[in-house]
Amino acid sequence: MADEKAPIDVDKLLKNKLKSVSVGELESTISNAVSELIGEDYKCTIDDVKYTLFSGADFHIKIELTYNPEA
Image 1 (cartoon, one colour):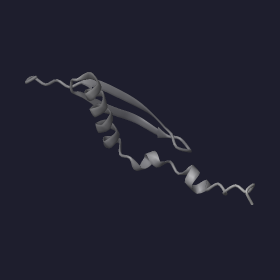
Image 2: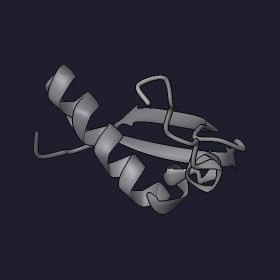
Image 3: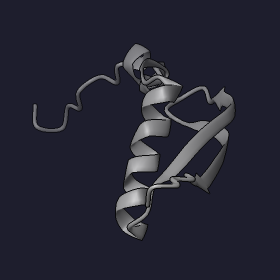
């Protein structure tokens, strides 16, 4: 029985989990990560999201410095 492999769950394989994450959450997380890396406030804008059949996504991302007159 050691030669038997577990069956592939096709429904799970075809489910794109990225669809459950909002674009706003992605923008916020990416802008926070870039801001932390650079040391200045940045904002992120995501446009034109296209989800692939499996577990991927293609999108246009724009990252720009946030203007803060008090800094």
